[in-house]
Image (cartoon, rainbow, N blue to C red; front, side):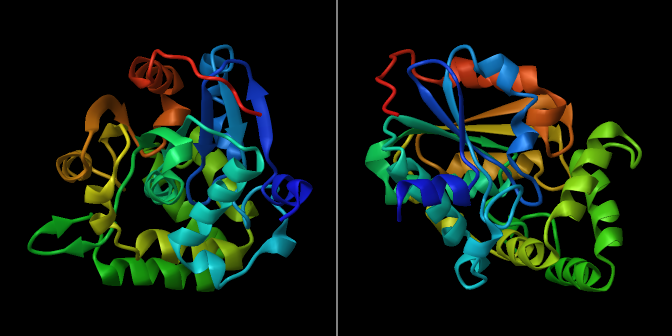
Length: 275
């Protein structure tokens, strides 16, 4: 794929300064703008690579393939393409929500290019699979959520946004997230939603080979602390930090705390920035 195509396809931006490279991967229903709260805390010390998954934000919708993006591996391929196109090495991957698992899949495919993983409010599986695992949602509840997307897309967005943020419906953060959901093409949103909420990547956790920082919110309706503990217990070379906060979007609601946790976690040895 030509150099220009990947950067246009995924609306790639490179900002900040610093020898260590951080690639920021947004979650479902969002785009790279959701990282803007974090940028002031990291931009002076790190080179930051931002992008939109195909089907999200200002990505090139003409590159969208339902078959490719109906699994998380399709979204992982977007990150792989970006890393290979920019020839990035020693990359710290920061992934929000489902992008924590997507980042794990990336690291397993291009291990030599990845240095570490930082997962913000991740979950390997949102489904309850008793008796051993409780992801927080019954399968029927998630199917009804998908049905609501078909019947009343705007209503679905207004319902899901406060559940994600943990804030009132009229809060600025909830309104922004709801608007982001509404601005996403319904077809691509539903495909991403299915890949997010119905996938089970618990088996990928023990395969990890990189240092992992798990950042979990103390009160999160989508990914409880118990999920973070499960991931920590099943992911080699991982550490778990629970942040005193509410909601699923720590990088937006508590960017300074997230930035401080990242800075404390990242290796102190600076490497060459290969851009």
